[in-house]
Amino acid sequence: MVNEARNWDQEFNTEILLKGWIRTKRDSKGGFSFLEINDGSCFGNIQIVADKELENYESEILKLFPGSSVSIKGIIVESPGKGQNAEIQAKEIKVYGFCDVNTYPIQKQRLSPEKLREIAHIRPRTNTFGAVTRVRNELIKATHEFYQSKGFLNIHTPIITGNDCEGAGQMFQVTTLDMNRKLKENETVDYADDFFGKKTHLTVSGQLEAETYACALGNVYTFGPTFRAENSNTTRHLSEFWMVEPEMAFADIQDDMDLAEDYLKHLCSSVLNNCAEDMEFFQKRISKTIIEKLQNITENSFERISYTDAVKILVESNKKFEFKPEWGIDLQTEHERYLTEEKFKKPVIIIDYPKNIKAFYMKANDDEKTVAAMDVLVPEIGEIIGGSQREDDFDKLSKRIKEMEIDIDEYWWYLDLRKFGSVPHAGFGLGFERAVQFCTGMANIRDVIPFPRTPRNADF
RNA sequence: UGGUGUGUAGCUUAAUGGUGAAGCGCUCCCCUGUUAAGGGAGAUAUUGUAGGUUCGAGUCCUACCACAUCAGCCA
Image 1 (tube, rainbow, N blue to C red):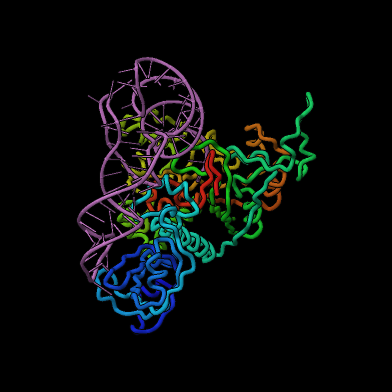
Image 2: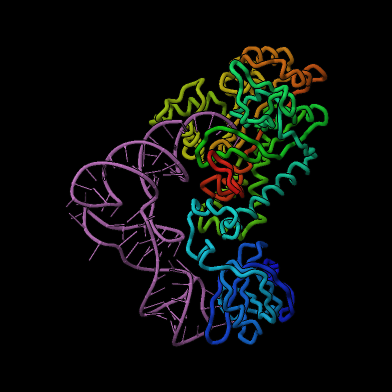
């Protein structure tokens, strides 16, 4: 692979075989061409020297343009030129597929991220998306490493759910009913006729199901797709995104915060240790301080403050906010940014939110005004993790469900967990794409997932 | 969903209401162990869509569409 050839640590002048795509080519009329090949194994390319003595030099090599796919059999040698240690003297070049330079959308010139989104099937061939893809992969690997090393069991929670009200946002309906069938006057849709015999949606969270396994097997985590049908048009929202949701039995909100902080630190150090070349690219071209930023995460502890103290800090900051900070109202983006980017300049975990702005399942605190919720806020992105200790008291949970006018019958199985050997337990959800954004410095969440789904866009 | 902004060649951008330019890429020529190669010549546009104002609209106005961005919803 190109990665191996670039960092050649064996004897030179041996024969190797490479397969990949041409990134750029420089012809010399003196009788040879330089081809740069990339195969996705690393950020950099390897230089191939193709001499005119090759039998297909005139007929094929000169017609190769960026995007063409080739295999090269050749001798790896120390490079006499600047910019690389090793290069390949080609003995044989086989062309798999030519690439029409007049219609191929990628040129040497820098393309805007917006333009690349229109060609999402081609953009993985760019430097940026190669780097994003490798870092994203590293974060997937690091996630499983982290939880597996701690004995968490990975569970797959359902994608299709019949829960009418999981609490988080608008849902996509799943149906096999004929949408073209016209209803008669006064007729309503009868979901008994639908595929599952009831109204179903795509999941907005695997948490409730994960709790059932945590309350049986200890510590578990999910890592799956999540769907929100909100009409959100921002740089940090997707309609379809991936979420990592650990759930711990015999754990409280303190354990939850510790886990969240350890996990984020593990993600950052994994990327720093294993994606050095890609991170140098991000530092150079995407975000000038990204490496120091990640190092700071791994070296310093997160700030932990209560919601009440956070509001106090905001009020006492004397900063002019568009929305006045006030106890009982959710923190606005400008408030979060002040805390993470100006006041503390690092991730901030905020706990003990007013119960009225949080979900029904969160553990009531003794003050009866707040719940054991925690949000991890990071600079620039804001909320990257949201979690809580769960209410494990049957009576308190039932009461809360009724208070919030949620259909309690839908939650009979969820309440059963509190009826049969209830345990204190806690967990959180990490927006995986936000983590990729955070680690790469990419400004728009649509550029850290291969095929972003957003309002009005489900192409490819 | 609301506020703001943008839409011109394959790409990136110019163009006081008056004949739509340039760079990159492409084609040809010259030079060259080059590396965002260099030098010279050439080809390339229903200015997002539909109306309107005007002698004349890429430019001004209206509507729509798309995209971006900020905010809300959240992860």
